Amino acid sequence: MKIGALQKTSLIEFPGRISCIVFVQGCNLRCPYCHNPELVLPEKYLPLLSTSEVMGFLERRKKYLDGVVITGGEPFTDSDLLPFVKNIKELGYSVKIDTNGSFPEVIKNMMAGNLVDYIAMDVKGPYEKYEVMAGVKVDMSKIKESISLIKGSSIPYEFRTTVVKEMLEISDFEGIGELIKGAKLFYLQHFKPSKAVDTITLSYHTYSDEEFEEIRMTMLKYVERCEIR
Ligand code: SF4
Image (cartoon, rainbow, N blue to C red):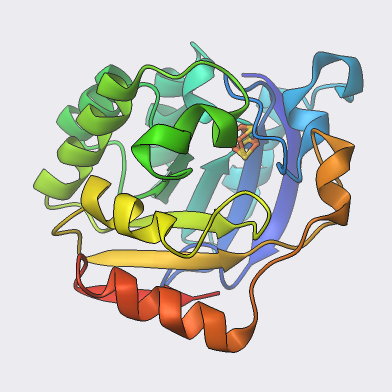
């Protein structure tokens, strides 16, 4: 596994679980506002952590943690992911995967093998802006297939969008709503400039609380629950 970092405890990343977070190095997208450039841009990569040391940590922490969040980067770019997750499940952990939705075939395999207990998928923007938001060409049929697999499964899930004011109009959320129509849970995430794949976005903003509420109302026409974080 290409593990770029490990956060040893989190009370918020995995709903209902005390988890640790494994950050996978590597991503197929280049979202300009991404705040993890060291997991996305090869020239910024830091030395990898040893997979066996991370497994050793998970073995020792079984008494204190009950979930493992695998995020990135994009976890599904790592061809060693499935055996890695199998080993984690064998230790008794629940697994949450964060994904950008580009690899529906791997989502399907994980679901079939009962390897995932919660899926969080980014929805970058409405259909017509997807490639600008993702910074590269995107196969939208894969994104749509992932959305439909996730919505159709019995596994708890969330969709989420990072709200960058300079890149997403309030009206764009109608298009985002159309993409995930019927979903149970959607999160609007404040964009917080700190680090970025494209540093121009460090001067970008998010919307005001009132505008977030307006966006939330728009999304509630399409999803059962919409929360702001
Ligand atoms: S925000 Fe975009 S570039 Fe960053 S890790 Fe997620 S999918 Fe990759």
